[in-house]
Each structure stands twice: as structure tokens, then as C-alpha cells.
Length: 173
Length: 322
Image (tube, rainbow over all chains, first blue to last red; front, side):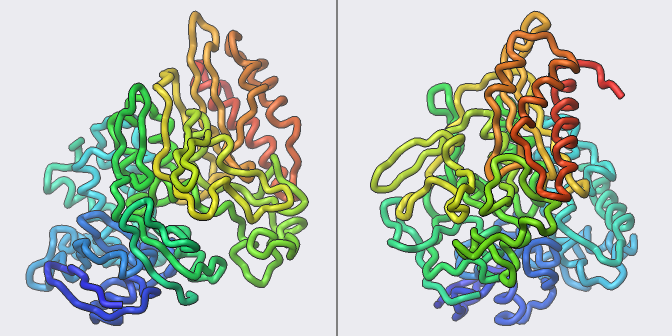
């Protein structure tokens, strides 16, 4: 079927089988291999992208259902010469080892910091109304949909906290 | 994944016959990839105007397409129905909550690892085939309401809170109706493949929460890891106190049965009584009277008792006792 994906600010007409996931459309139809396939069942988070600014699993989204939405992938967040704040802090804090989960971690953290800014509580929050200090426990809970099999978690949390502090969000509601 | 025809619904009245509804897709697509579910046609309803949660008199009407993350953060839900926010936040991951919808969450399959594994016999996947789970690895299986045909548990958290809140499911179709959530999900009996009362051609359009009841609201979930895991057992509790006595008690349980579980007799016992461990033990005895272990899940019986006690101590303001 003919669809158009709005991706990283550009429209891409595509001819896809209805079974094609957004993840496979990105990697195999559009050549954007930054988004990774891990479990392909929504359990690992390696495929995390932003849809209309919200983090989702691209492996559990049909490409044809993503039509009409704005998709942002890791390629749309920054470039080697112009890194996003999270990309820079993952480098500075060594927030990875093999790097396979990293695009998903960074897309997820980007969406997560916006959720904090919007005042969304989490399972780790003492109250539902905030403010929510970005403690280790809060970040770990909010990032639990992203696995890192190298277990770089402590540095991932440090990178995210650094960005949150830099934007004054650490204690934001 | 097997081939399917793909449709987009233009209106609630325009659902193609025989098509399986897809919204967030988080459970359905997972099962389609494994060919555990093989619909011939999908109809995408995500463009229908069912994505608002708004007051309806004293009630709150939650559109079927309200995402789990939006519902958990909704100001009215946080203020008046905090047990629902807590249950939603205890479920899945941030990514999945952004996709999963209110109606779709109710329609997620009651399931177990044997349902996923097509080499194993499963009456739910293949009616009449038998149940490989019985006598198998049963850590996550039911202790209440199971049958000789199926011992799977309903894995969701949201519906456990909705059960305690006496929510009602609004259904559109040839015969529009409202069904109490208590009657929406079914016990397995000898037809475990039939999990809800929703009929072909019908669609959930909303979930209605009755006027707020206040009280102390808790959702306590016990699981094998701290986040992103199904409940071994969970308790949704709404406790109202008056003059040192329990004036209102609603208790629903997850991870223990084919549907969110409630026991009116256990709740009635608490009414008008002063909170005490002895009273809570008595309520747990009533709740667990019909409990039946399936081999290695026998730990769930004491676990449910302890989790209920801890939740009731907390919600009634008793000091936590070692």
C-alpha cells in the first residue's frame, strides 16, 4: 500500500506491505539504520523513536498506522557535528559499551525528559502531583523499557541527570 | 506475520465485518508476529474521536482511545481516582504506556507462556487442544477461578483498579449497551478462548468511572523485578474510614485469576469494624478459601495474604508491623 511517512522533518512516500513495521520501514525501506532491532517484541527498547514527540516502540507499530504522524529517529535528534545534549552527555559519561541500545536509550530519554517537564508522575514517585526530583530511582523506573545488555546503566543515568541539570529540570515538576 | 487486509475506520458505525480492531497494537501485533493471533483483516480505529477523558455529570467518561500515559497523568484521575493512576504507572514501560489505549488494555489477552508457545497445547489458542500449563511451569498462573481447561492469569494492572472503582464499559454496535467491568471479563470455564462479553461487530467506546468515593487508595504490586514485569499478585484497595472504623472497602486483585478478582464477602467483613491484624487475617481467610495452587505457584497463596495485610495496614493508617 502507498503511504507517506513524515520523518525527521521530511515527507517520504513509500510502498509497503501492511505487515511492515515502522522499524522495518525505517531500516530497510529508508536506510535509516540508527534505529535498532533488538527483541522485535517491545521488551528491549532498542527500537524506540519519537512519534509526535512521544517515545514509542517502532517494532510494535505498523508503518501504515504511523502515516500522518511526525516521526523522529536518532538521525533527527542530532548529527556528528551538531549533537543533541543527550548525545553529548552519553559520550561524556561513557553511557554505553557496545552501543547497540544507545539510539533507543537516547530517544527514550529525550521523550522521558519531556514527560518530566509535562509533570507526569511515575511508579517511583512518592506523590502523584510532584515535583519529581530526578533521582536515580526515578530515572531507573522511567527508563525501564530500555535494556542495556552491557549494563552501562550507571553511566546512562549519569548522562541523563547531567542533561536534566543543564536544563534546570532536575527539580522541575 | 500472516497476511491481512488493512482498513481505517472512518466512524464507529463503519467497522468492516470480520475485521479485528487495532488501536495501540502493543499486545495484538506481538501476538500476530508469533502467529498466535492470525486476523484476516485489521481495522485501525486510532483516528476516531475517542481520545478524551471528560466529566459526564458526576462521572468521568474515559474515551476508549485515551492512552495509558495520558490517563495516568490526567489531573482528575490523579486527584479523584489515584488508585487508577498508580495501577497504570505500575504497568508496562514508558513507551508502551504511550501507545496502549484504555479500550485496548481491557482487550489484551489473558495469557500465559504456553499460549505464546505454539508447540504447546493451549485451549485458549486452539480450543479443545488441552492445556500444557497444567502440571507444567506455573509460577505466574492462577490460584482463583481457574478451570481444568485454563489456568492463565489476566496480566493487566489498569483493569484491577477499574474493578475496585466499579467502572462500567460502554459498548457500541448493533445493540449499544453499558456493561459493568465486573461482568466484562469472563472466567475460563470450558471456553477459555472467550475472554470478554464483547461480540463481533461491537467496539468499546469508553470506560465510565462513577462519582469519586474518596478514601485512601492504594495499588500494591508484587513482581519478580522492580519495574516492567507482570504482577505475581497485586491489590487495588479503596478504604474509607469514619470514626476509627472502616466505612467503605473495595478490594480488587490482579495476577491471581483469569480476570481482575473481587470478593464481596471479604469486603463486607471489614465494614464498620476497627482495623486490626486479626480482622485483616479473617478477610484474607475468606478471600483465599477457594484458592487452589497449581504446583509451584503455591507461594502465591501466602503472598496474596501478606500483600493484602500490608495494603490494608497502610490504607487504614495502622503502624506497619514487622
